[in-house]
Image 1 (tube, helix red, strand yellow):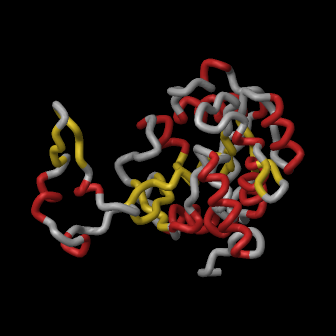
Image 2: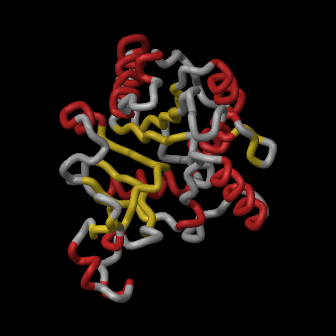
Amino acid sequence: MSAGALGLVIARGGSRGLPGKNVALLQGRPLIAWTVAAARGARRLARVVASSDDAAIMAAAAAAGAQVPFTRPAALAGDVSSTVDVALHALDWLADREGYRPDVVAVLPATAPLRTAAHVDGALGALAADPAAEAVVAVTEAAYPPWWMLEMRQARLHWLFPEGARADHRQQLPPAWQPNGSIYAIRVEALRAQRTFYPRQTLPYAMPREASVNVDAALDLALAELLLARAGGPLRDPTR
């Protein structure tokens, strides 16, 4: 059967930067619980499934209300494992065991706790509104112009991009956007055919920087805690 959009919450156990980060407490709740709550609150998701190799993460996801029908294979839970393969494993498992075949999968990493249900619905709404689009990726404006990045060669600095050397002010450079790691929604047909979350027709879904914290280290977790405290609870999408 075909059944709308699947929300796939992904989290692996082997974090190096912040061990155990996906179950680290943020305002008293495991980090993964924030993403599960956002997914369950999204009106455009028909189902929310978590993919993990770690028993503690799986238990936290289930407690937060996600379905956890399988354990992710260890081969798909390494430092350099492909997220595309993680998504395809989930889609194949659900198709083979349950006959469940969603039209769209929204991959939602557990490391983005400030992304809300409204953001998920906004991204999926943008994809639904553009039949020619194959995917949508959440982005935020880059904090620093990439044209001003440098590399070191033989103890000397060199411009990565010639444009950087010609610009004295940020205003002279075009706006640049970076994926914020919170939402990768794609039509399943395009994912299977092109094996990327950036197929030929990929839409941006712009999010504010304060909703785009991605937890990779203890400092990121502290920043998320601070932003939530300042907001008085889960962040709200100002467009809603």
